[in-house]
Structure formats: structure tokens, C-alpha cells
Amino acid sequence: MPEDKEPTEKMVSMMEREYKEVKRKSDTPGEPDEPVKVTAKPAKVHTVLTGPGLAVTGSKMVYESYERNSRSVGLTQIRLVELGYLSAGGDNRGWMSAGTKAALESFMEDKKLLGSCTDENTLSTLFAGTEVVVYP
Image (cartoon, rainbow, N blue to C red; front, side, top):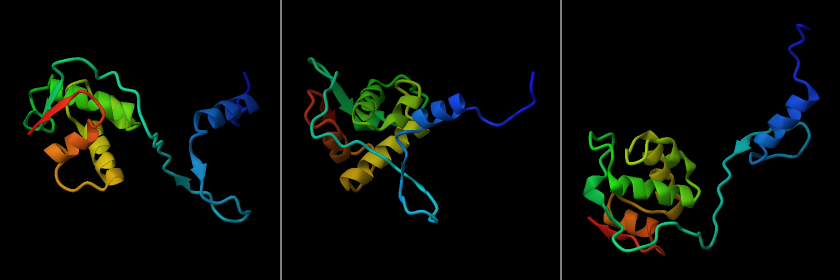
């Protein structure tokens, strides 16, 4: 078995496909390439959050709480992933940890919202266009 550690063409091709969503700031020769954040901003997003009885309560959304199976947090994670904030999907469902908090903060930044990640204004904006009712 050869000791050659150089990537093969097949490996390079796979890596390029895997990271195709990373765009580069500069196409000018001689300038360094820097990765830029790519976010999709669709006008209307399909949601699976339909049906009666869906509600989110801001007071139930506590960062790394012992209430790890909060329905409010679970619904929030689903909506964030639907909108393209994929870090929310990295946390255990129903448990608000670093991924969900980062996704909410990115959402707030993109929408230019002020306040808390779990306040009524943020959650109402997040669930706009769905049947989910938001409570403080």
C-alpha cells in the first residue's frame, strides 16, 4: 500500500462538491480567497407546522434548562431549520442549547430585531405565516 498522502482527483472532486455552497469574495488572481457566509432568503417558505393547538410560549424557552423536552423549543427548532438556520437542528429536539441560540441570534440579526431571543416580537416574526400561536 503506497504511503502517498496527496489527495487523489476523486477525493478533491468530492470535497469540492461538499463545499460548493461556500462562495469566494475574490476571483482576481493574486488576491486571497476568503469564505463568505451564504444564506438562502426565500420569499415564502413551506412549513410543516400546521394544525390546531400549535403554540409557543416564550417563558418555556430557557437556555440549557432541565426541561429538555419543551414543545415550544421543539417547534422553534423546526421553524428555524425550515428557514435555513440549520444550527438549530444540531441540538436535541426540545432542548435549547448553543445551536438553537445561535440560530435565533442569526435570525434576529437578519431581520434586524432587537430584544431577547425568546421575546414575543422575535417569536411572532419567526412564526409569521404559520398557524402557530405565540404567547409571552
